[in-house]
Image 1 (tube, rainbow, N blue to C red):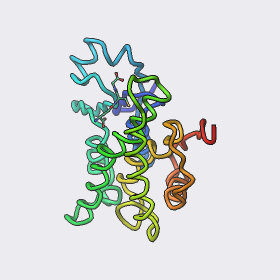
Image 2 (tube, rainbow, N blue to C red):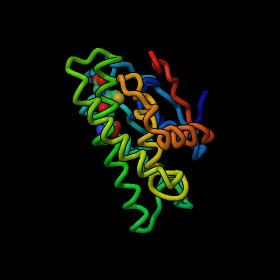
Image 3 (cartoon, rainbow, N blue to C red):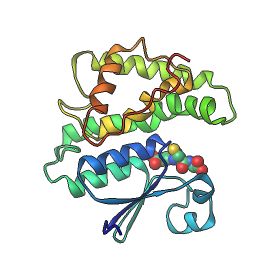
Image 4 (cartoon, protein in one colour):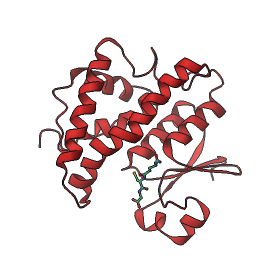
Length: 206
Ligand SMILES: N[C@@H](CCC(=O)N[C@@H](CS)C(=O)NCC(=O)O)C(=O)O
């Protein structure tokens, strides 16, 4: 029986959950994982007790019930990483991390994540606008990563974890990663971090 005080509600197919699971493992925080399929997270009980939005991930830590992947990353880093490596305490590096959390929730969510939802999971809609946004943000990221190893600072932070999964899964949304060599090198660096589950490139080239 697990003695973990922390619980994570999620699914393995979600990039939003992937980033939280990765940080829990990187920080060596023991946790119980509750696989939460769509019918469960849309239930009245889930909405009443865990997240009124009916979305995963949700983290439970003692009395705290916290939905939203990026909020969870900030909480875990502040609570369990006393060195401040994953989310720095100082104003400027913290803002540089925050900038990429916004990209994860904005362009990456509306770009590669949305294209994957349509192409891989059958969400209704035209994938073309999402694919176009994906190519725009990938081009920006590729230029940004041309002369640095990680998105926000000289070492990995929660910014990299937040952006990783949906970029790695971009081929499942019909987006070729070959034109973005610096992004591909960065993906390999993040996948090599201990505790990070590398994304399968299931549709690469298909
Ligand atoms: N802003 C939220 C978005 C989370 C989200 O979109 N979760 C999806 C799964 S990846 C979800 O639970 N959607 C509701 C559903 O599929 O029923 C976060 O960052 O955690």
